[in-house]
Length: 325
Image 1: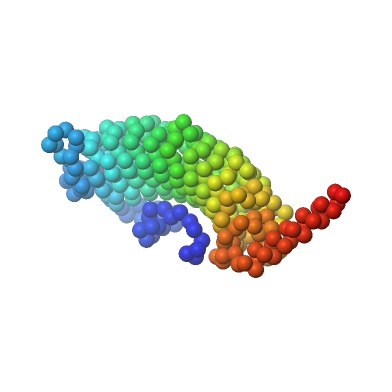
Image 2 (image 1 turned 180 degrees about the horizontal axis):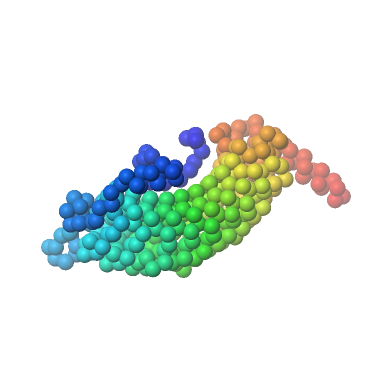
């Protein structure tokens, strides 16, 4: 992936951590791992960041790191009510109910665990939670997921097939949503007018639907899906500046026509690795639809390209006028 191909990286990618093992390798490795119960000694080892609690001179640790502990049961942390930053990554946790007492949580990471559902999880208790990552679990739907204060939500690498429950009433502050590597076939279901960045790469998306409610969206990442057309883009997407459709199945110039709805806002279009790139002079085709673009794929739009596109637009306008006289 090039540096110019903008993409939102999950936390493990930003830190340079390795990707999860293949299924066979993971199964073999799990057989060798001994599961340990959580105890006070492990908790104390993971505590840091001493802060005042708000009760006169009382202080408490507010950060707890329990990643890579082979944990299945975390009931022992239920009494640590002042925790605000909690990392439970790389364990075998399926039940978050012991966290119900941690009502001050601001940041929660539960990547690479055994969570299958958000139902009966205590997420409604976390009224101050701003950042939540539940990447690489076994989640198949979003029922039970709520987060009135969540600003960043990362659900990459699960098996989510349908977007449901993402309503503005429950996620009024959500600005970044990462759903890369799930099993979505459509973009329908996003009722999030305040969302700014949406990452849907590596799904099975064939249809663009329901995008009219994403009025403040600035980034839409759809790389490595199964789109054959961009029908579904709409004039309500008046804030969109970056669109990545790299590695889809767009084969004809006509399939790009819906790009004209983004004339007032789009600055960058990534369209490489689509059949249309080899079938037509795609940069010129795109610039005729979007003369304001600043970059197409890796390369900035040149003055020569922009001038030629405007000349073609003027010629087409004159020809159309002539047919009506």
